[in-house]
Each structure stands twice: as structure tokens, then as C-alpha cells.
Image (tube, rainbow, N blue to C red; front, side):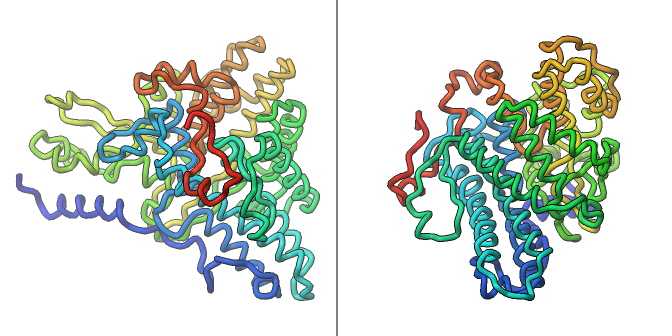
Length: 495
């Protein structure tokens, strides 16, 4: 086939998108490998540098997938009924997660989920220990508060995901290496209780809403802490406290639901807490790198789309036209008629209408901004989830008359009418449906929802590749290298 230079450039750009590294979140004078009270916490400026280093560590400095840089979303979605793997031969480890048949030698547990999360936890611990040890008068009270509240929130955030992926895990609460070498796993409820302790201590430290922090939403605020407390209590089935903290976030009037197209923008009024990626990033977020094809056809004019889909050309472009991880058609079909989330947040690339493609559609998540000129952001907490938390907590307390209001805000924003559910059972089903279609491709929500509500095995059994999945396989295996390094660390059942 003969292609113009323009099409060669498109192909080259697609290749670049797949290989270009993500720029730093912030510029840091020294890499944050260790934190010492003497060096890092002698002044507010050094404390700021360390906090920025923790946030940068969470997002990552390249396109490596980690728990917080796309990993929770990708592998939570694959383990649930959200995603599928387009090419199982090229990506066998991803395919194993999709089948809920992870091998102990699968590197995803170790390099994507376990190690990156514990590295962030270790940094948070070092910040807490370093602040406590610092006697410098140049480290102000306000900065000490910010350090402690931020580190406790981030530690709790990481433990939430580690415990939901792995179940019982070591609870590391100090930067003292000698105390962490032989830690045993603790029950998930103990992890949750530590999270609550951390979050309540952070909440007690933080004063009334900081207008500057709320505007940027890239610093830990009372609202961010309250939102994570609401989520944690929901998972503990403490409905009263889940409702209480969700109401505090909503009642602050600091946030509002955005239009669907602007929900994930850097300036979104819906965002409660986010991390920033500097301008100039190309496909910087883990979700866009892994869930979108390198060349979404919707970005090209009709004539170019026709060229890509020409049967004589398609095979040469298939790799950049097909997403590595696509949306499961069960999810695509779960949207109600008229749901604008499907038309705004779901996209697809077609294929030639000839054998062996037969106009098959490769659906993919299209939620997140992609820009190489404007600052992009990583949304960790947003208002829509908080409304759904409160709706579920109220439904579980039989506060039936209050549930529909929260639910309808989410539905109406999506272009849907008010819910017709009027009793507890129907409302809980309606909430589960809204969580599925509102929070898809976000932080593994669907996987965790299926597990905490006891529906995982029955739902996953409807997917042919997941036939025979057992309860043991709803947890990921503890990395083998970690077990070898720590004789007190045991493997999850069934591995």
C-alpha cells in the first residue's frame, strides 16, 4: 500500500505515544529515596520538597504502571467485569488477571501493586517520623500540621487499596527498617481501624476549609479526609458514620457536580483531591496509556478514518487502533438508553466490515483528559462517589425518603430521569447500577463493590473466561519474593 507522509506521521506519533515517558509531577532537587529529620525537615521549604516528592512518587516519573498510576483501575477492572484483554498472547499476565487465575510468578502483584504502594507508605512513615524528630524552629507549626495530615491521609489511601487487593497484609507504621523486616499479616479489619485512626488524627489537625487548598485540590484538606472516611466506613458497614462523613463533604458546599465533559478537567468543581502532572505530558495518566488505543479514530477527520479502516490498510494499523485493554461489552450494554455517560465517557474504534473483522467495535474508556499543552490531573476523590456513598448508607438505614435525592443528582447529570425505586431492595439495586456506570474505569471500584456486597462469584461466573472462579481468587497472591524475604509472611489461600 502507498501512504502519504501524513499517514506515516500518524503512525510514528502513535508509536511515540506508546513509548514516551511521563514528565515529573514537580521538579525536585534530590530524589526522595530516604527521609531524615536532619536534612529534610530543617525548614518549611525542605518539608515542601519532601511532600512534593511523596506526591511525585505516587504518580511516577515515567509510564510505568503502579497501583496509583493506573494499576488499581486496570487490574481491578480486569479482575471484575469491566475490562478484557485485546491480545492475550502478547499480554499473558494481564490475561491471567482477567481470568481471575493469577499465578504466583505473575509480576503484577509485586511490581505494579505491592511494592509501589509500600514505597509510598514508607515515605509517608518517614515524613511522620522525621517531623516528630525535628527540633528545628524553622519548621513552622502550620507546615508540621500539613506534613502529618498529608502523610496520614496518603498512608490510609494506600492501605485501602492494598487491603482490598490482598486481604491480610503487613501493617507498616514506622520508617525503622529493623522493625519492618519480619512483620506478619494482620486482618483487613485491623487495617481499616488503622486507616480510621490515621484519618481522624488528620481531621483533628486540619482547621476550617483552606480556601487556597480547596481551589487547587492538590493538597490534603478536611474534605478529602472526610471523603475517605466515608468510603472506609461504608466498607465496614458502619452506615451511620458513612452517612455522617459524606454529609460533611457535601454540606461544605465547596464542590459541585460538573458537566460530564468537564468532570475530570484540572479545574473541575467536582474534584475533592487530585495530583497534578506537569504540562507537556503525552498520554501521561496510567489510564490513558493503557486503556485508550494509541490512535482513537474520533481524533481524525472522516477521510483519514476511512483510510485506517480500508481492509488493505487495516492490518498495518491494527496495533495502534486496538486498545490493549478494552471495555467488556457487558459494561457497554449496562448503560440505560439515553445515558450520556455512554456517549461522553465511552468511545470505540471500528474495524473493516469484511472477514475476519465484520465491523467489530473495540470499546474503550474515554474519561480522562489527554493534553500535551495543558496541565492534566489525577483525580483520587470526587463528589459523585460521595453522593453514592451517602445514598447507600441511607438506604441501609432504611432512610428511604432521603435516598432518591442523592441518586437523582447522579442520574440527572447523566441525562436520565429520576429513579423509580421506592423500597430498600430496589434502591440498593439502583445504587449498584449507578456505581457501575458512574465509577467505571476508576480505581477498581467495581471489583471492590462486587466483593464487599457478596456478588462477585455470581457476577463473574457469567463471563466465559471466568468460569470456575473461586472465592480464593478474589484476592491477589502475595508476591513470592516478599515471602522469601520475610519468613513471617504467608501466602493467600489457594495459591
